[in-house]
Image: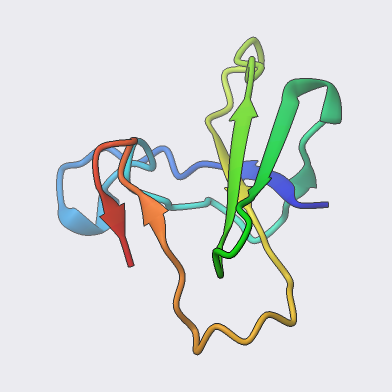
Length: 98
């Protein structure tokens, strides 16, 4: 499975080491993960002729919240692409990060 989720660290933000998991802060409570239901995801892959890149866009949701458990949604890629360990992503659609 490419999309997995785990329970987020609740924290209380009283000290940096207690910072809660949330936007831009990935802090899973445990290493236990579960696959995300494919009925809650959309994946769009774009290949551009002559370009040495692959563009992958995920849409996830809705994320169930009725159990009062914070969830961290994670994309995991396993590939044999020789990328010299370079990976590019965006910061909420506003800038590209390497």
